[in-house]
Length: 328
Image (cartoon, rainbow, N blue to C red; front, side, top):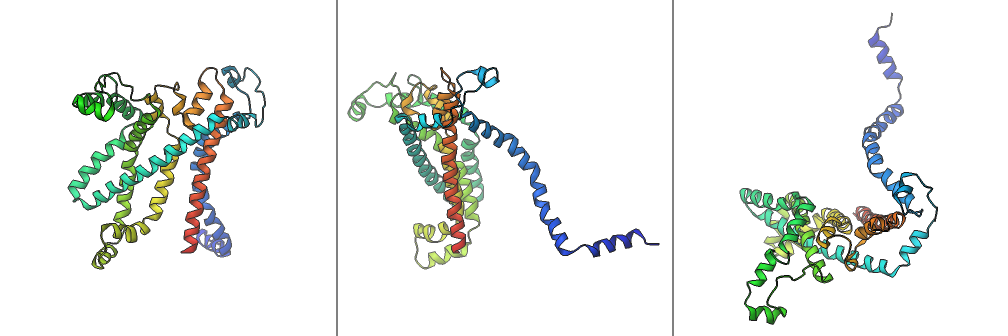
């Protein structure tokens, strides 16, 4: 009589290596299924709904609820948006704002990361904790604080400018009384303040990420470069930066995506969607979709265009990374 152990051993012996390999290869995909299901429900399904809405003319809540039929317009929404000169202005604002913020965030974050790497353990922990407060602060809360700082009557900036000597203030800025000055009325000044808010909120993540990358760089290479007479800038550019290029690449892509999608800070600082001269793609999509009269189809088409731009940026980065791996 064959025992259970012997039967199990015979079954294992009859199983071919190919079958065992196929069974093992399926395991990672099975483990990914719960995550893929969550992504599909929380991300892909809403994205699909937005894409579908962009092909219809939707101008009422009743249509969204299904009380009325959705009129099919095909690519008419995209043609209207892409043919509108105002869209080109909004796209220009978005690209220039994103480029400026990515450059400033990367520079400031890298400098702070290098500083944290040079400090002692206790001081680095203290400084990193203070820096991360900006990252931990919700975007809405931080923006409200900054809006109070630039308030035209009781804000800190207005108070500081009023403390300047009248002669100096008049000579430099052409006015001595700053009470009631609209800091957010001029588009260029508005974008400068918005850049300050976004960079303040974004650079801590870059700093901590760069610090983590610096910890992985062998100190022997940096020390050898110093022995050969290289200065701090030369050591960073010739030794540190090449080893951290993948880290910087990922941070640039993430920063680009975040800065293209800035919405909360702009909406709060501008006080809504009244000032169209400072529109960027995110708030432009919102304004078209929800400002009276609502145009949900046009708003959805702008959102799809923004998504496509970000996909192109990500695709270019992935291609660059793959090319570098092939060359190495």
